[in-house]
Image (cartoon, rainbow, N blue to C red):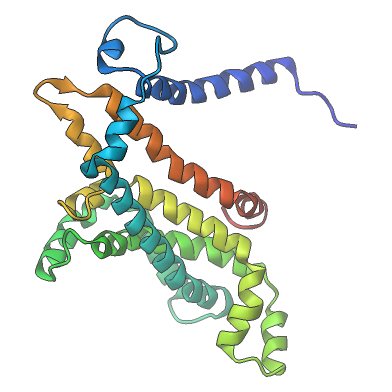
Length: 270
């Protein structure tokens, strides 16, 4: 028989959820009001709904192109990071070689390093190679942080798969690529889903590298949002609408991989 949650714990959970949702509600409320109404009298709810802020974003190419740019380089980074991390994680989980623990630790130190440390080397290198202001530049820069995280998560899942499966497939005549794609990869699909989720989220919210390595053609939405600041003040309504729309891709990713995330927290090393 399950015990009921203590009353103080219930109150704490309610307060915590309310405190978490309040900023989101306030941003949504601001996005549905005019700038004059926002700067005017305080109100818990919009006096009248206005969709002009969203209309501005969907009709102004300088706004909606920022979302397109962000989604393109984030998708590229997620695919590249997971693709590179899969064989690396398999090697760490199945083989022992000279310096394997040191190499694994070195990978994690890259994830712990602030992005500002790599900013100048990346900018000079990409300027030399004419890669600045391209989707590939941001995708490759984010791999420095996402690949170590992906290897760390996937290695935990792969270590939980018995080695006898590899040996049985080898005895049955499976070539390694066929074994990895047909047998091994489906066994760790929850880990792949969790890894893709974390790679997506980091690349989506990262601003420093994305803003520095782009200028016009690949400018992300986070950098575009700074254009609301002008001599006349801040365009709060449009900025709030952009913030609401920025949450949508992350929410959709969470919805599609929610089952894998639950399994990842229960089975993997997340």
